[in-house]
Amino acid sequence: MGFTFWVMAGAEQSLLAFGAQLMSSPDTAQVVIDLYILAVLACIWMYQDAKRRGKGLGYLVPFFVLTAVFVSAGPLLYLVLRGGPETETGRL
Image (cartoon, rainbow, N blue to C red; front, side):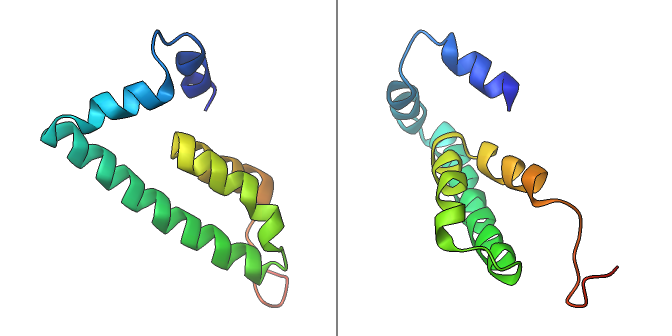
């Protein structure tokens, strides 16, 4: 995540311009589309996991925003802050 933010901070073009450039060619557009399909699946997983852990939708909004902008940043941060595995009984 740190590398992503470092690269974007030093980028010569805006994030929107970069995205538009990627979508202008079918081969790179396919990669972007695949990434966002995975991002949507990650958001679904985060929602289901947070719901099971008793977290509300308000807790997830920052993760969804990060996912929409940087794709991997939201799920990675969610995993870091989520803690270890948890079962229904609270034990492994």
